[in-house]
Length: 185
Image 1 (tube, rainbow, N blue to C red):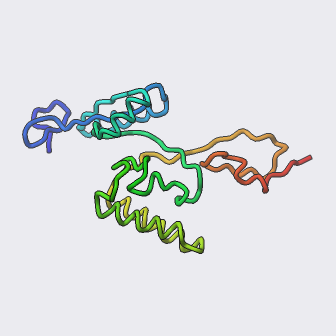
Image 2 (tube, rainbow, N blue to C red):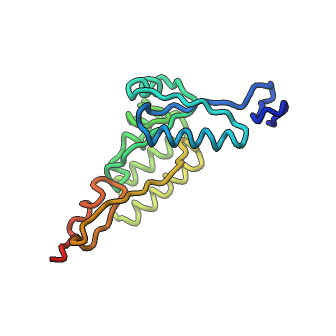
């Protein structure tokens, strides 16, 4: 691929521009701004990106029909243990976004993740659970079912009367460790 006509956009072998669309949620400012940033960064390297913003129902309809090039969305994990999110990890899951609700895994990578996640959920020790999940993450990285663009950050305001606050990315950001909180008075 190269920019044969000098217009700033790369062309494929057939002469068509390197272009794809990203679907995201309309009205969700952070998602819309993030996709605009991705669009601009890719434009700078010669890739054209069309941003498609849709209401949540239309978005998930397109997702279920596999009617998209790329999809930008964020899921809020509700637990620190990935075994508590089987709808995302298992190929049969309704939130298994790259190939939703399959009767059986469509790829060897998905089969491998299914097997690993079942082992992870049944593992007896934290160390074993962590090691198995590290394998899941390696499969995800090798297969690229999804690409993670950003890491979350949490900023919380806490009174100076509160000691030992330890915010987390997971909800509730502060109360997950309520047993460590104390008052200065």
